[in-house]
Length: 96
Image (tube, rainbow, N blue to C red):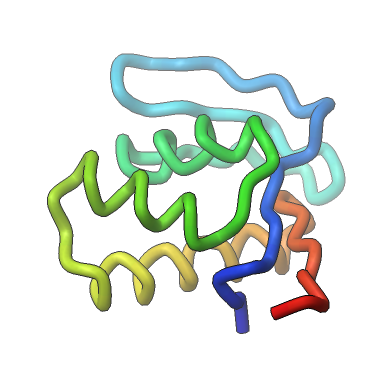
């Protein structure tokens, strides 16, 4: 489970290539290419800078005009998938 105060970022040494609105990168650890659709690519771009989960959600809700519940559910699922592949760093904020 990801909480609002958890701080998110992506690995710094993972080059990506942009193809229109999509992005792709090679995940060396498991030997696969990862393709990101436009929304996933935007999340990936935002994770270049470390930020709290709550701020990430706010930015995405504003940019994509999506309700809070849908945004939280979809982004959480995507981040958990990335986390399982060790493609996102989730630092738990112990103060929340």
